Image (cartoon, rainbow, N blue to C red):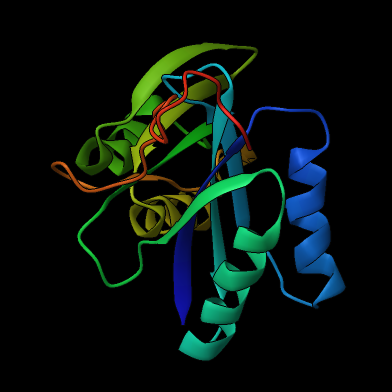
Length: 175
């Protein structure tokens, strides 16, 4: 089963390596991995997608929480969450640009530019929709290059991952 896991972790050198190493040591595969800063410059949010049974993912979450740099872990699978992926896609129309436009229309794709008979497109949407769009481009013989961000997720409303300095009564953050 596909699982989307969000992790809050210290924004420090080596933190990502420790998370990736934990997966590698235990033989778990990471399908996608995305890391970026949060509203707090000392904390990063890591979103990863992996496959496994409920028991395996529960074990992954427990192991992640044992890492010194990890603040919190949330498995969003099965819960309400927003999920998007960004892709930059280079295409070369076979005959005319209208065919590419027709394929892109249902996906709200934005053209970023083009030259030398190629166009660069930006896609933002679900991974499933992106897979469908890329397959259509491949079938049309138009796909030249693809760069994907991997999943980025957030829970709606008040639920989610939050880190507040001083939550334990101190103004100093400790990880």
